[in-house]
Length: 298
Image (cartoon, rainbow, N blue to C red):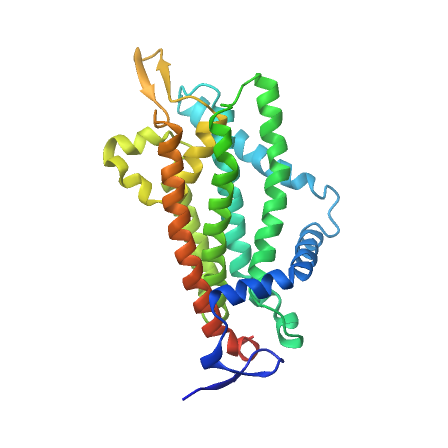
């Protein structure tokens, strides 16, 4: 027997006749103008009454770079050449992912007033948060570009072809998790706080500050079970473009990144992308099941 429920302040809907994930995505596309407007709103609110404005997007990775360079290169004496390039190549995609996931998780709760007043595809809220994070990502690329110019460091022309695929895979993965967590957070507000701890641990479990080989030499390809590993090392392989370096202290050649063909990296991205697509379908189904009582819970 069908259950009657109210979605926000919109019309009564038959839960048994909920749109399937494809129809939900079509609805989002039809409301793409609203999506763009919400992205603009997110950007304006973030830097409202801020003197530096979008410059904060540039200062964030720059400050991270200074701190980690001091700790790992000066204090700990890690000998990785051009550490700034290596670090930024991994940090920027991670920042995009963590910012997307954090802001999308709180997007429905943060727009409670809008959810209660009018009907629109609620999935637009987490997607708008991801869209705003993507804008910041492109701004932060300026820091990386400056580093490449200052050090006169050439990326890999061949592996740079993978960057759009890696970026798309990252966004797909973030959207899948963000939509699902946004729905859960309406009912379980601890979700957003737990996520902060998870992201902290996840950061250190991903080879951003240290080389991929540091962990792969110990656990092998199990390191690729972390979806962000495949994405991050693709960015690093394209931009940092080194798989080994010669350690003058130990007089040995040290591994940095997998010395594999472009197809190996593409295969890993394909696996992560395929799993993310399945995860997105599940997230949309979960979102559709939980959204009926959003207005009441908010």
